[in-house]
Amino acid sequence: MPADPSEEMKDIAGQAEAYLLWMKDEGVQRIEAGNAPSPRAGSSQGVDVDMDLKKIAKTIGSCRKCSLHATRTHTVPGQGHPRPELMFVGEAPGADEDEQGLAFVGRAGQLLTKMILAMGFQRDEVFIANILKCRPPDNRPPLPEEMETCLPYLKDQIRLLKPKVIVALGATAVRGLVGLEGISKLRGNWVKFEGIDLMPTYHPAYLLRNPPAKKDVWMDLQEVLRRLGRTPPPVKPA
Ligand code: URA
Image (cartoon, rainbow, N blue to C red):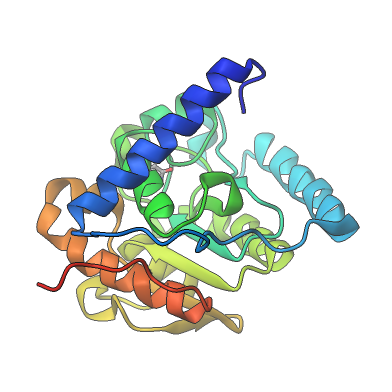
């Protein structure tokens, strides 16, 4: 969050614009006041979780367990609220994420931000992470052995964060977390990760290549909102 209040206002205005654009794309006609969710209580427990998350991030920062450490600029542990209701898991950092050390900050990340805002959350109210914590060269898909080596970091993060719902973005996230194949059949159907409700849906990068699939993702995200006891924003009938 910027220290300068005018920068902060610009930031908020930018987020609001992104929210309204995604809603407009999805045919949302009306926004109800008072429907904005808030993160789960901060509490001293949140502080402990934050410290443990930082410890995991530090361990990831010095990880050399696979060859990806040799080509990375920064590790990308993931970031967000220490007590989130909602967590998003993607595949692996791309060039922008590797450059900044933050998950989902490139083009796919901007679309993910619109999705999050359209659901009525702020980005810093959810937690965003990936299966891999380092960028694969040329953004190639993660290798099975890289996933196996890296997954314990994500699993430790999830056990600390205890989100109510995980949204797995794309085939790699679903395979990594629940070992299932076939994202187009799986999407929209609840599965469990260690007792936590997990919703498989398409990856935002796929949506950039295939915009008509946005309506499927929006349906999946509305299902997530229902599971969280939130009222999904009203959508124009098809
Ligand atoms: N794609 C991902 O899966 N994760 C990111 O962080 C960015 C793009």
